[in-house]
Length: 71
Length: 242
Image 1 (cartoon, chains in turn blue, brown):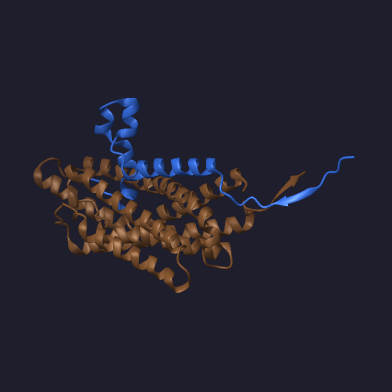
Image 2 (image 1 turned 180 degrees about the vertical axis):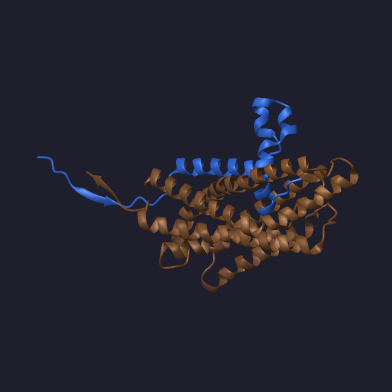
């Protein structure tokens, strides 16, 4: 005759998938706010993106305020 | 650990702390940015590149309002980004952090990360307002700044790992090791290559407000993540049926 027992298992390890997801978010966010000079939009708009600098201009004030080199 | 709960807590904490950072900057930093950009405008008028007309100022004010809104959006993006890093480090080091609750532990970690990946790099490569900085050197300055952050951050992790090999008071050897390494790197790395010709009181005031703004972020992320972790505890025991 089979018996069912409940055991409380403490799973405190950090899931690898969560670390990978957060690492990607960290790198992407840091690049957008701190370092993009038209690179991201250049994927869609080509060389013109390096002239327009939309992300650079949008993040301009925070880029200065957070200590990143801006221009 | 509940993966989805962990991710939600971390991302909400980062985004909220970033929102606070961006909003704080509207009060702390924006007056200095406006002053610095006005110097740039006067230089444009003097060089003849732009004319001091009503049309110019209308366009300028609209543009600056858009950038000030971007300050908050960028704060949320940067906050989510740094919050993601903070969440990883907190989850991995939580059991080793001092403090008898998660809020204290998170604040201690926020203080350590503020010092190692923000303030020490800031002392070497301090923030500058507009009018300071040559566009031709922006890539070099970005590489230098990011390199120093990475060296200081990885050195902190490395010497923390090393400290586990020591017992009791000998652990302080790791702290001295970190200080020695970062000091060598501090003096060995090249200076910011750009000449700073902006008024000293503008630059100094901007830098102080910049530090206050970023410090606001690190305090907020420690408090919010610590509180959310206490409330929802993604580490809680998972029932398993055998």
